[in-house]
Image (cartoon, rainbow, N blue to C red):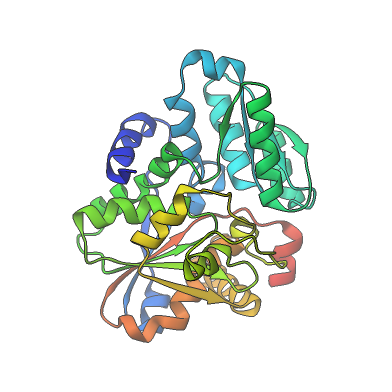
Length: 316
C-alpha cells in the first residue's frame, strides 16, 4: 500500500468536512519531561475523535450507487460515531454493529447522530467478523475501523497538518489498537521526514498488535478490561495494518491502568479539556520515556474525548 498516495487523495476529498485541529504546546508536560511537547488535539475533531477522517474518506471514495445501498461497519464507539456523522453529512444510511459490552455513552452518541445500532457478541474482533460477513451477504460495503486503505489514508491527514504546524518533528506518540491511525500518520510523515521516531502506545490489558508484531503473525489474544476502550480488542485476520506497523513503527510502549488513569487526570487538570482513556495512553507512554527525549520536539496525538460520565467520575 502506498500510504502517502492514499493520504494525499484523502486530503483532497475530506478537507471541506473536517477540522484542522490545534497543535497545542504543553508547558506542563514540556517541563515535566524536559522536551518540547505538543498535543495534537483530535479530541476537538467532529464527533470528539480522529475517526471521522477515515470514515468520511471511505464514504467519499464510494460510488453514489454504493452509498445509496447503505454501508455496514463495526465499532466499539468512536468509529461508529464517525460513520454515523459522515453518513448524515452525505444523506446516506448504514448499520453499525457494536459489541454487547460497548460503552453506553458511546453507543448513545452513535444513535444521536442517526446511526442504526445492532449488537453482536462481546469481543470486538468477533463483532468485526460478523459485520463484514453481514455486508458480504447483503452486497453492502463494509467500512473497517482500520483495515482499509482509504480509512488509513484519512487518518493520515493528521500527518499533513502536523507538517504545516510544526517545522521539526522528532518523536510522535500514537495510541495503538488496530493500527489505522499509526499506519496513516507514520506512513505519511516518514516520506518527508524519515528520521521521525514513531512510538505505538497500548494498554497492558490490550496489546494485540504489539504482541502480534513480536510474534511475526497476527495473534488471537483476549483483551482485559481497560480505560482505553478505544484501542481494545483483536485484529482482523489479514489486516493490512499489521505489515504497516512492522515497517513503520519504530518502538512500542505499554502502560498500566493506573498510569492511564493518572495521565488522564493530569491532562484534564492542566489542559482544562476532556480526553478519553485511549488518548491518555499516549500521554502515559511519553511520561514513562520522557527522559530519553530531552530537548526534542515531541508530539502526543490526543486521539479522542469520548469518555463516559461514570468513568470520568471514577478517574477524578
